[in-house]
Length: 90
Image (cartoon, rainbow, N blue to C red; front, side, top):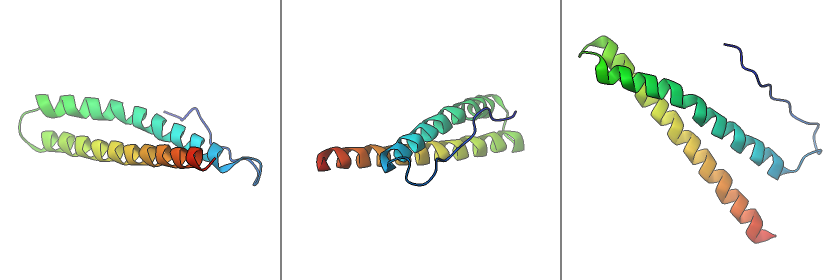
């Protein structure tokens, strides 16, 4: 399935750092949303498949998706922390 969005970076100096942070935060949010589908489907498979290689494969997918969601959460926490630092500095 082709991706419907494209990433276009503006010329250097046209946008403040906060705008880049906001864009990165939106991308992290979208990535987290995209991870919900494979995480949910793989979780359902892992719960319903009998013991064996297929179930193990579904469990590996679940673990990878959960790890990716954790990384997205770390990024979002970092963005929130930086935004708070900028507000305090202003």
